[in-house]
Length: 238
Length: 234
Ligand SMILES: Nc1ncnc2c1ncn2[C@@H]1O[C@H](COP(=O)(O)OP(=O)(O)OP(=O)(O)O)[C@@H](O)[C@H]1O
Ligand SMILES: [Mg+2]
Image (cartoon, chains in turn purple, brown):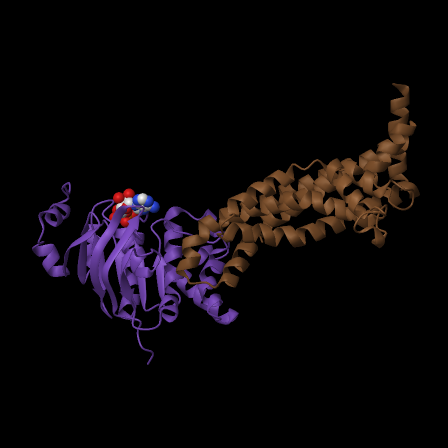
């Protein structure tokens, strides 16, 4: 049994751009199992939080500590960006890319890629150039490419933002299957229905600060802040 | 008017019958410029890629110098190479002046900045696109460079072709360092200049057709590479 890179403990983390504080100070522990949904209005800092957990943002203050050495921890996580980044290669080559980086043998990488393309509904597009996919298809590809290495944790920044209802449900199934198979998920979304379907716990952000962190049931039944209540009602969050 | 038509048809005839002089000059041109393009690409492509990825103190300055070097007048490059290679110059003992090697050196100097600059822009664009993803996947420096070069391979080939196009049509520098010596350093452009001066338009025009054909071919290739990029082939 390989030891998990989790829990991740983030303490007093602050992200600044020039003098402006974008995030923090944040104290947050990402436990070994679970499905965390990050919510909050536009500009609240969801993307910045996910990026700092993943190690893409320089912390002006504080730290994020994994259970294994950073180099190992970095290799066992994945990130799906808000606007998907695809390599200028075929769908198949996009999917095999992270596997090949890890030295997976070509035949096996291709077999896995076919399987994952099927799961996200890109089975017929394997040889298509990825830059020509539609926005939603790119998101599906980015998601499959993140999950294909079976990371300990995956960060998802609004992965269903461009997807229609059916594709959204398909992706949710894929996510829940991965989650059940042991992949920890931290996901930002604006979709309240989706949050209710997936969340085990919710982190609610406002102006760069975590104002509420609760189990899903409690958050959706009795939000602690008026802003969270407003968001859940679909009102404007002041 | 009659002279010109006669020249054109005679020139055309020289091409069709593969006139030995014309073939020799064309082959010399290709030998010099293909070699120069290859050598320049060996420096310029990695350098351009490196410049796109590495952040260092004088990066902007280096890029500015590179762009300035692109505008170097070839005649001046020829003059400098001449001075360096001439008998009394620092590299005079090598005896390279008025040899194809001297012409290759001059062309390398002329096109290296051009190739490096185009390569830099292309790799910089891909790097900007891929940056977060490659960092997120915790790729090693080597893996990053390999990925950028592979996915930028069409742009890099375009850069090399642009260098070839510039070098094959250049006349000032290679005239100075090559000397346009018959059967030794005579190439398409210098021969055209000489024959025109002598009033022998048929050979000049024949060589001109070859030069135009080469230039057009290069541009068609660049265009074709752009197409495969858009169509996502290979
Ligand atoms: N590079 C940057 N420079 C300056 N400010 C930035 C930068 N990136 C983000 N910000 C600011 O940081 C704040 C948080 O941005 P972030 O992208 O994390 O929000 P978000 O919650 O993900 O919003 P959305 O729901 O629109 O995706 C915003 O006010 C944004 O304007
Ligand atoms: Mg965001």
